[in-house]
Length: 296
Image (cartoon, rainbow, N blue to C red; front, top):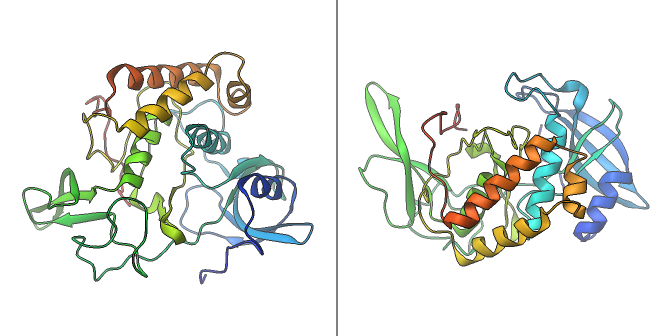
């Protein structure tokens, strides 16, 4: 379907958007094809305000052998709660609510800025999150070189057919780096390129966080370019701030207890403690595929 207008009728605050998503009347407009679970495109309206959103009912989830407890919807909302607690706003407003097909996740729909395919990645966004042009410079690329060019970070070599390989790289972008830290915290098992949404105004959102918070190490991502490098001062502060909010009986932990299991909350605390202790981006464990498939 063509991309519809997804901006609310006026500029709503984050709190107002959460209220609209939680209490507004949800109307299903259609189904988004190609997803392995039910993903419904909807409007949500209340008191003259309206926005478009994605509604993923729990009833439409396929069971996963390595996530036997909880729901995809609960983990998606938990990822939003952690993003907000870190102060980065990397996940669109996301709530758990009842809908036409039962309880499910409801998330504000983001109109992604199209990539500027004519940009070779050497110019444009300088990593501060400000968009200097009409299109978004590429965030991911395959290059023939052995080493990434200036402004890029290497991920891995990838087969491109006919016995040829290319170097998979991602932009050395401050917004992506924040997402890499968030993914390490929530143990994201599926950070693909299609889950990165550049938004108007230079913001970058991450979506599709249903396979997160596993108690075992499941980190699979295309954002390994900073592996082993020291966290930025900003990231270290965000992790420290989150650690304080994960103390027992805090409002955040009470909220997470409604969304994920106690074992997953303990594992979350452990990952945050590990990041605080090392002060570095994690590296692939070698015990689990480190890159999602397919990568897009």
